[in-house]
Length: 122
Image 1 (spheres, rainbow, N blue to C red):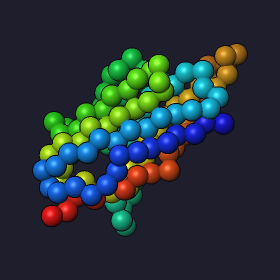
Image 2 (spheres, helix red, strand yellow):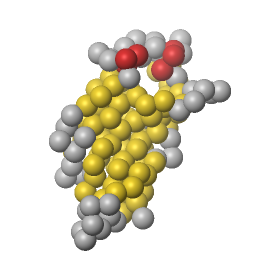
Image 3 (tube, rainbow, N blue to C red):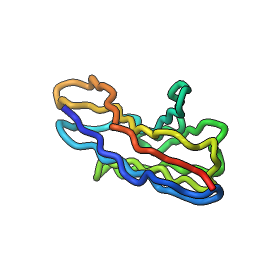
Image 4 (cartoon, helix red, strand yellow):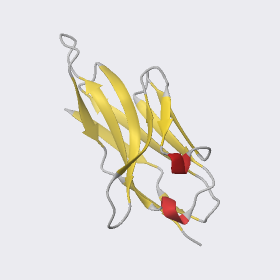
């Protein structure tokens, strides 16, 4: 079993910044991709940013140049630095991790955090 604990959400004015953090714990041998998704009210959940175990990143076009995803493999954490925030960034942000749980197999499975609210409003 794996638990992902998120922190850093809150209320910020347009143009402001927030940093989201997520720590994975439990039966972890290693973690492949980690990343962030978000879901606004009445909308489908969308991919925001991902980062591989080697540090390669991908971003949805709407956040490129504003958000930065990073990770610390030793701590099993992933961070999303969000700058120049816009009202349309308002959503619940969810951490995701693809976790290898057994040293006997390369099998991995996705786990999700509980979500943290980000509200961008003047």
